[in-house]
Image (cartoon, rainbow, N blue to C red; front, side):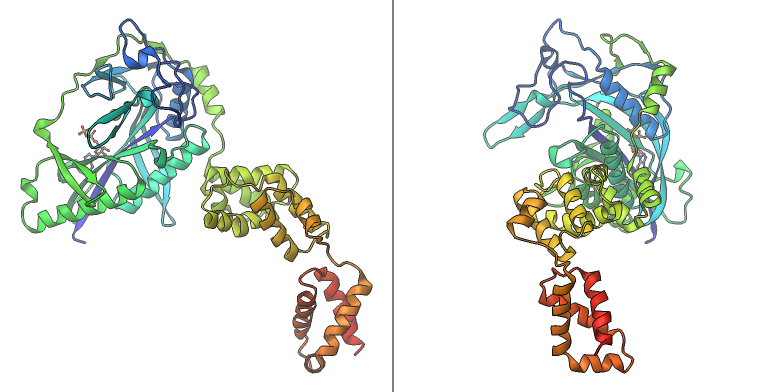
Length: 485
Ligand code: ADP
Ligand code: MG
């Protein structure tokens, strides 16, 4: 490609983990009857005043620390004035960059296709979400449950050079919000929305000099990561086409929107039509000093993030890097794994069961680990049964599926199925000799030096017993009996 691509993101993520909204005592909840989580202040009734939710501020400051941003000395808010039916006050309480939002100038290291990348964070600010509206053919409906839900807006510098990098960053942020207990960051619940800024420049120009940057095009309100990827790729191509046609220099700075249906970006407004929001400091929220002690307390309470848990799994439990990354990809999976260990399970066995059996099955069943009937205590019990030789590992697979489908404990399933491992030496000797009688040619190969044929014979014993023979006992007995031939 003859061009360099510059991409900057504005990522909005609802803080979903507070009990109440950012300025009112209404419940912060996603799935409820429309318009039931609403307090007078959310509807801007005269005489009502906002009260800042300390928990939301704490989570915002925690995110600011994780992003390596600096935190302000005083908390402040501003009014962003505009009218829209989903905004009953006629303004949104937010933070612009003056005096200072919850986070300024940080950076984050993230991984894209196995390579470490750095993105500079311009700022992180705390604001309130607007209500949500649903549009029907003859009417629109507004649900004020979302009005006043705490929202974090993160603004990056234009440091991404491809759609893949931008999406890898968003995935990293989602993981951070989940692991830090700030948000589920679930796009399907509308909790994450992005504005994407894209420009291109000739590939030989120095991209550290803003004078060389191309004209920024902003794409508003893209609400899925795949949408972000598609919108960026579409926009890059659109801008390249303009360059090649010699029309790029005439292109005005503009705001577009991503249209899922036509898979294209559509012009909304140019820079001259930019809205003047007439920001001023929110007079109904007094100046609030953020103490050093409180910041220290918050810093100490930052939970272990995905990469830290991954390192621990590798160092302390000897789990491979590949498996450890699978375990930490989604926090509920890592939590399930750790819960299983707390119940005494061997880490490697637990990791194997989860990565090779559980996740694949969940995928097939199209459910999440939180919806699945098999619990960490079931898995710990199953692992113990195999270790104690109560059932074979072959049998354990069936028991696992049974528990997964029914939610019954592995012990119950094993006894229902009448499963037991054959650990009786006499019984195994009998089967071993049966196998030897049936395979004189293999015995001969063995005697001629092909000692590995023992594996085949042990395999036959396992087959005959439908996997119920204790494998190491079967191997010992086979080694002895074949010598007698
Ligand atoms: P505005 O004042 O229009 O909001 P900002 O300078 O604050 O613009 O930037 C908003 C977003 O646009 C940031 O994420 C920033 O990284 C990104 N951005 C700025 N200039 C460019 C550019 N030339 N190309 C791509 N993204 C850009
Ligand atoms: Mg904003």
